[in-house]
Length: 401
Image 1 (spheres, rainbow, N blue to C red):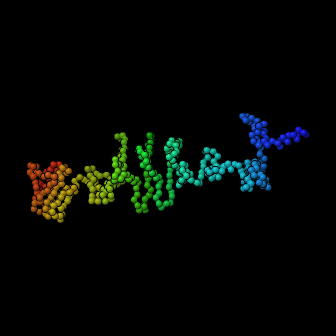
Image 2: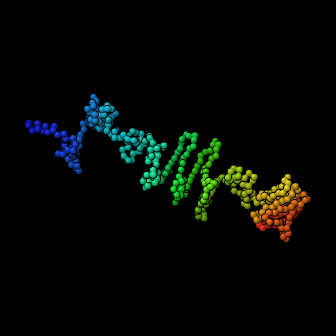
Image 3: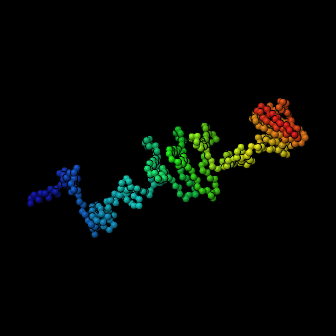
């Protein structure tokens, strides 16, 4: 009896209890029988209940732990503790799962690294100024080994499915500008710059390969300018070699190789008023492209020559680039020839009307000679002169009535 009271007094006197140890490190310190080879009874059994108490605990039990051994109402089996401030039994598992990311279609936190996750809020990496669903910033004081804002490596092994590095769909309803991809490359630093750099490779098979495939959708009802590709480069003060588009194509002798191929009409010119338009069909054998007054190029046989008349003009008539046949009316006082050196090989046919004589003018010391080197300074109307430039002068090759 004396020993019993001694043990009670000893227990009361000491505030720390050790189980499996004589040197407890806390108010209650339980040590397994063997840390390396524990037995089946090394542990603590929390009070096991089939249901919550009918009467809620009080403030003195705030934090009290139980184990619900069976599902009870909407509470699954598991560990619970009494949260007096909220007046509720709270699941330890639910608290542990409370997180900033959830499993899809649940409010549970992902339990492992292979679970899918979702978040309704926006995410900023390297920035707190968040203006997008995912915003990434590499800051000046970040590690210089981090040089990519985002890298995607798709190594999917499937052989029967379409795969994508990135797929973007902009289905917004804005009436303002809408972008699929917008790139801004700054001018800081030196070295080459690429707005878009693509490497596309294919070594086997017969399916097509595209470096860029740009498909602009239906434009019916779009009362606007529509562009497949619009390229602008440089300014009026730009220096160096400047190319709007530079294309190089290589292939073997049996391949159809084109640096540029257009399935449709081609228009070239600084403005619509200056443009000329190529046809979208090929000409017949021996035909050449000839432009009309509207800038349209048409396939014509080479027997066509331009006919110009001096009309009602008076005074001196200067032969322009458009002249091949020139009908000279009597009210013209003289005819001025273009420079022979810049028109070498050019042929002119002068057709005089009436009975008077029209003087001929030349520039830069040029003259008109016949086949015997006799100079011709005027043209008798009613005659037809066929002349050609030999680079140093004009030469008469035919005279007829």
